[in-house]
Image (tube, rainbow, N blue to C red):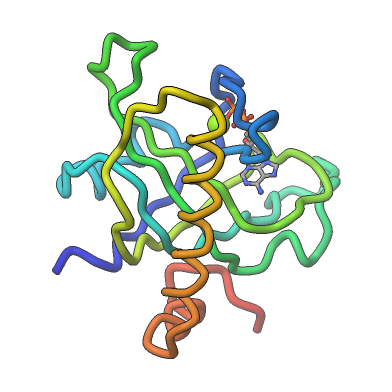
Length: 161
Ligand code: ADP
Ligand code: MG
């Protein structure tokens, strides 16, 4: 029973491989943040909760608003990155929320709670987009169960005092 798996790190810039134009931007965690999940070593799509953390210093002005810092449902893709000859594992998180702006460089925390499906090879963009939509529904349905909602208040997250 590996879940819940806590992850955290500063959001990295990826290669912009079409996340946004597929309507599904994915925030990338740095390599060293992935070790807690790499022990699970099963690539594919996961679901859970994620939270973007406000910058500590007031000098760095933030374009995000209070709602953007809540604990929110997410789907995460864990896979071998073709850009690195499939030698490097990447974790990309799509948060199911409309953000006021991008949040590169911000801290992101996540609790991975369950596995949805293995990685698939897509012959068409339509098939991929369709599967992502299904993943989001599966995630939301699972997270709706009361046993999962307690994880929104997990000590791993930054909670309002
Ligand atoms: P990249 O290759 O740089 O990861 P993406 O197209 O996947 O490019 O976009 C990811 C970026 O989009 C994130 O790092 C984040 O700053 C921003 N973003 C905006 N909305 C979301 C969201 N709902 N979930 C994840 N990232 C988002
Ligand atoms: Mg991405």
